[in-house]
Length: 368
Ligand SMILES: Cc1ncc(COP(=O)(O)O)c(C=O)c1O
Image (cartoon, rainbow, N blue to C red; front, top):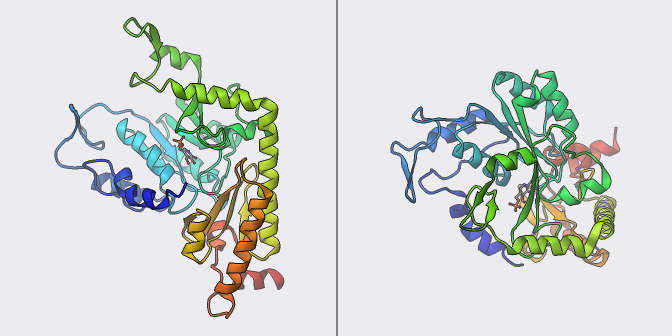
């Protein structure tokens, strides 16, 4: 869409709630840092937001939810996911625990266990990510449920939300892992990602009992309102319905297979060319070493974090597009690294030494 410049310009204001300090860089799983942010963002006077008087969390001046909200991010500097979930914790005055992630971006289950035990006695809300933003890692719901059980959590002491923003329409075709037969509370799927709706929208699936608690018949609108705020976009469900019914089950199944095959094709070709690359199981996101040239990154609209870039192999991406991307990258790479003065980046800490082809790890690989 060519919107990178626009997004960059607006990034700071978009992520900084009015009246709060600018967000600090939160290293993954660094709870001390989280606390620092909390303290730093606590103003001395209550914050005015429209006609509501809102005081910041962390003060003993009002009711709070006595539970913890647990989340993690898939890369050390990836702040998007952190912000979405930590904002919710702030709004509901909950304690927030950041869980470490493994190198492939998946939740670190031993850290989850440690944090659950540290917070024993407090009910936990756990955000399970079914496809992380940058690395496309899929958390193992069954291990998380087992961990909760091992830590003595009964079903009424936890709530699991499955964030399947991109992968919600991919996973069901490859692995039957998300099911309301398991003790989960909700699943969300973005409408503007794999479904391809032209405006931001999404689907939330939850249990009828939770909806019934919230629903009220409103005479004025001659309907049942089950939302928090009231109004909602009536056009979005039509786009969602159109997209779902136009493609149908078989159409999505074909899309999923093609995307997975194409992602594997991209990963294999980059690997054969000696480029650092990683592809998670069940994922259509190929993570590779960051291309050296900013112009190349702009041309292909790549999203980058530190020394990594990623390619999301969506249904509209053809083999031809992938081939021209690969050919362009290989040609440019020759120019960037031809005189040997500069080497490709080492991404062992980001995607694992086994996936890194920097001069150090490549040698390691050849000489066991
Ligand atoms: C894991 C994850 N959760 C949530 C979101 C946000 O979803 P939405 O755009 O539907 O608000 C994203 C967006 O990239 C995401 O990757």
